[in-house]
Image (cartoon, rainbow, N blue to C red):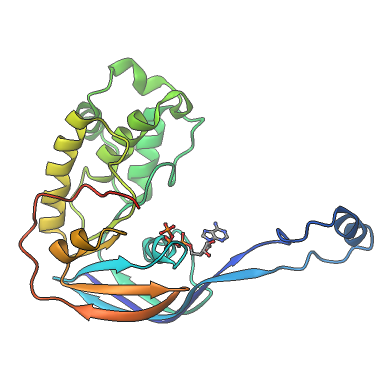
Length: 246
Ligand SMILES: Nc1ncnc2c1ncn2[C@@H]1O[C@H](COP(=O)(O)OP(=O)(O)OP(=O)(O)O)[C@@H](O)[C@H]1O
């Protein structure tokens, strides 16, 4: 059974003296072997969330309030600095371009790697099915992802991430760079996943989208939960999931 439990979770990003602009002080610090002072920025501050099957959670909040970080924390991209995180169920994170890929590896190897990371075996049939969904030229399978346009890259990542159904679906910026033909096809596949996933969490600035799609909205502010609003059951899976970024 899919579930997400976060208890008093904090996440601090290390800054490694990124705000120390004095070259002299940094060089002297090294010469004197002073350990570089590690500063941090608290992106998630004491957040507790309990989600069970059927949850459709919208994450709202101004720029920098912690929406993407919270999704990455749930996806396991970043570990919590403190608090408890317990997740059960397989997660499909659609968190934007570049997450988890090596641009110097060829497309086929990246796809295999991504499948293995999510615990799937990259059999020839599955690899063919994924590539067919991208509608890209077959020769591109052997090219490094660095040579792909952002739209092509999105096709490869989307086709790979959505090749299997999800228990927990996490959606951040997505679908904004693919062309119209692919978007329609991707949207159809995504809607199916939203429909079948036990838990869906969507980060968005589009309040209309969240209200139509979710049964509760969490408003974040400076990494904290400012409010949590339960909604009436959303209209089942409205066909307007393409996100417009603010
Ligand atoms: N890799 C990083 N290193 C250091 N700080 C980061 C990093 N990523 C995000 N932050 C900081 O963490 C805080 C939360 O950022 P996050 O991207 O999660 O916000 P967001 O709500 O998704 O913003 P947006 O609506 O603009 O996408 C911000 O203060 C941001 O500057």
